[in-house]
Image 1 (cartoon, rainbow, N blue to C red):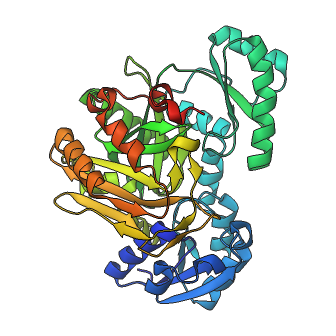
Image 2 (image 1 turned 60 degrees about the vertical axis):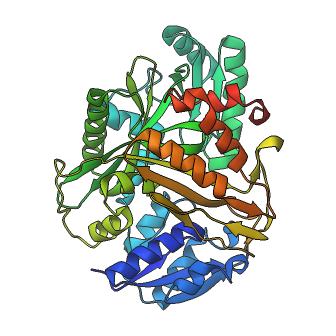
Length: 450
């Protein structure tokens, strides 16, 4: 087991990793920007080093400074968390070249799965269904129009690199396809320095279902069941839950088995998430792999009782996964909501500022993962997430009732938050009945369409 680990991240996930390490008896080294100098995670770590100014391009994305901090801190491993450099294959390779273990997958697997075209090829080899579309990148408009007419409109233009909805456009005819190709390529070039795009059949009103996996370095690949992340806005998740409501058990089992096959085919190790879209007839199609721990990992932890961060660390240290697939059973219902400092009534504009009052809920089945406190200032430089409220009860009905109660107790003053929107969604019949899809929020809540 490692003696010291550096955490190449900030905020909530940095604090989460510190807590996991402390329970394992591992010392931690934090890095921080000038904006995070007084953050709780910096205080909780055994050592901490400033690595630059507030902008992430001058701190948390500076590989050389993170490696220098790791060498000064005399660590054996680096945990990247999520975001920033977590899915940067070059960073993973640099860590290992410097004889520092990267707590994540091999950089080769990360690079292959980070490119959506090569990831689709791996999926096909693993006999996992992909959405009908091009097998490679689109080279010109004529090719795109030909493919679109073969698979039928509407089609989805997708960037081969990156995520978060950038470089994506829906085209419903030849004219919108031509315009969408240029717009998506330009957006992808700016966001990911890669203008490559491909086409997929656009699935109307799909569900977004993802499978949490764990794989060790000894050939064992396990799934921790699925999460439904369909309640989202412009590809940004708002609510995640497990099990996926109204998804037959046979389909849940099949989608989890498909994820395991794909991970084995990719020669992937450590934690990751295989993402699918599911149509109205419960047919599922692979879309991508997130080669890291996810924001919503507590949902899977609560239904399975498995600490995913500690599992990541143990796998990276070379330990075998002791559990078996049969032993991983899902208990009850878990739902997570992300509470962000954003204004849903004003196009989800970020609301940086000082939290003047904070009162968080408690009670049976309530978990709050956060790094903020009363007096904390939400920085304009980073993600606006205040924290994650996760509920675990015996049934989905109980989880929703507890979540409603918990949100009614939640008090945040000084900044606007997404709490009112979350409360509205929880009251909507489509959510209550488990009939969500990825377009529900934009179709139904008009103040979030702009």
